[in-house]
Length: 240
Image: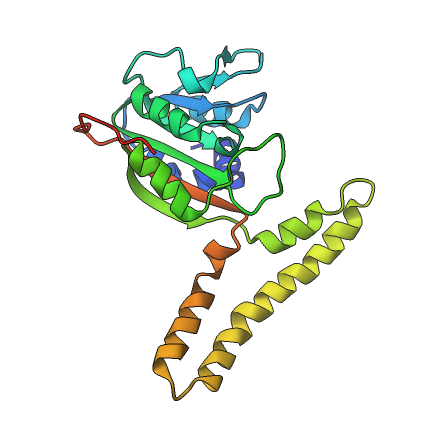
């Protein structure tokens, strides 16, 4: 892997999390579908730099990209080994339909990865913002085996910064530092306080500690996921 490709992967949260699963050493050329790719070029550079075939699809007209509605993609069944989605599912009016389409165009054993907005502000006409449970449900009922789901960045610093657009962005950046500090204080001090306050009540103590342990998911700015189309596809796919 070239230094350039390695740098691009490290800068991409999804691929940095899952590239070892997606691009296994010794694999033959894979077909990689970049869902609602827009005008970005980094994913294509990574995929082609690793010797695989990149295909981009988007409803807007972009050079080198197939223009189509991803709710009804113009691809045959079982065409792609990997499907990649970066912060796109919150913008679909029927994300479950898109997930079923992704399942249809993937080869058995193929991998579907991405991230979905959770505690982000409404943006770009977004329809649905998914929790980790919603993400798992959408993937499962669409026929995928869920391999991993984890929280993205903490939402509080992000939300503070988003409250101050240009020309006030510098204010948001400064205040978001205090949001980050608050998160650190909460994570480090609250468990100690809970153990101290409830040292003689194990049930309450464990319940409140679990609540704090769930903070990453509770305050996630986005949700990352990796899923797999089974080798033997179920005869019917559930509908929400």
